[in-house]
Image 1 (cartoon, rainbow, N blue to C red):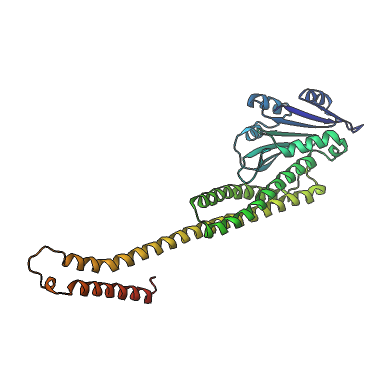
Image 2: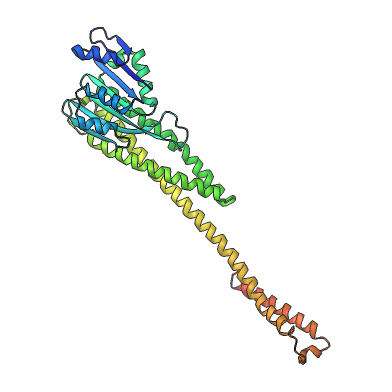
Length: 323
């Protein structure tokens, strides 16, 4: 990945597309709006580029940290926004996240990410093809990126709901360890997403009420839209997380029920054969004098008694609803 730059001329509304060389040109007179996207560079190179915008060292450290909680922080002439979104290769719920840092100034926007961001790519192409769109300003661009990043999560969660329903049916019809493993994996992923959405919901819930001069009243609706999107995502992920947890509990209960039924059957079989084994062992002893062995029909009498005993025990267990 490289450095991409869009520079909007304030007089002609023409846009120049280039790399960091445009930054040097822009810094000479600070005319127009500059958007620089930094992706996949060495940390030292990224820090050097960010320092040219005269931003605070602490904000640079936060932006370059590999894992930083989402946040919005004002630094006088600019605002640092750190978001966590879906990486550009996401497919299904098993995806990786990326950290996107945005430095939003009055006449500049810097986006920084270690992995490809489809949201940034989309608006970079839009800005290059439709220069008038850039005239809305850096704060508007940053807000639209945040909206699109939030919207990318929704289809992933909506696609999970029917899958959980299918797993619920499979759990009762064809229970297997694979079903349990998939449910556990989904629950783990949803726990991670809930935490991400909670951070964003709180962050934008507070930021939409801020009095920042960069994000004026004309952007309140967009900020509310971002907040409502993350509020919905947090609610939906919580519901799916609880559903996955309920299915896991149901699977464990079902497995325990099947095990209890198996143990009950084995217990009944043992209870029936213990007295029968006792009788067989009693008359199978090698003593010379066992009176019953002299009975002419003793064998048949013992078989009849054993059959009656087994039948009686089966009837008793059936009456007790053990079978």
